[in-house]
Image 1: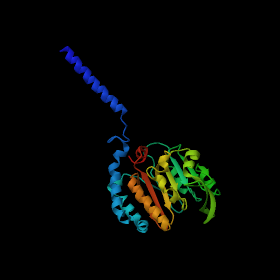
Image 2: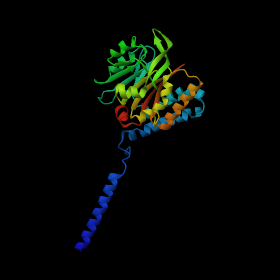
Image 3: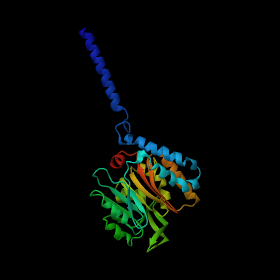
Image 4: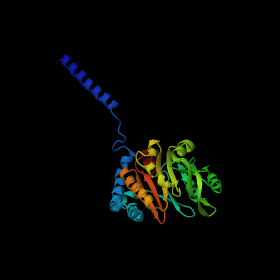
Length: 293
């Protein structure tokens, strides 16, 4: 009997050790159901996603229709019960309003402005509500006025445009009170964030690139250039400048790809000749803990 008991004991011990070793060597899931922040907001995001998909699917394959009607779907879906816990703040400047959710925890933020446009009214309002140690980085190729305004925030100013690639590009820039087309130096956005700003976790990026935004669309996709370079964007404001037919197609593909990726939710549309949108990341643990839960 003693021999049989010992044999059973060692057999159970062997199986236990084998299971433990198998557990250690198995790949760790990205998110553990019930424990991750992303899981906790999954039903909220899913409700928003289904709402917008239902309201704009009729425009899939119709760039003109989507451009003229996307705002209606966003307006309907941003007020569903599952979205009512979000506190999206308004930060107006002289001609538009930026959106931002301040952190739910006492943590500093990194804010990027691409296209200052002689106006830091929104940044001045936002900085008052952020934790000490928050950082502002702004780029605009016209240093007159912009440099003085941005450094007074205080923020770090860069005297060039930021876009999809480095080089020279024709851009619409503000000189005095008029927008004119001028050849400017452009820096690749990945180089800008990784090598100059030296930050990979961006709380909010405000994009007003006077047309350069079209080249940045695919950076936000799952597996896009931000993902490839381990850059996280929690929130972003983007102004889509009055598109031609090709640009309407790019915008159409951008919106439906975002829906397919299930990372960002879209809010606060302002529709005119241009379109302004605010987007929030529901698929990153840190973003969700900091801004949604």
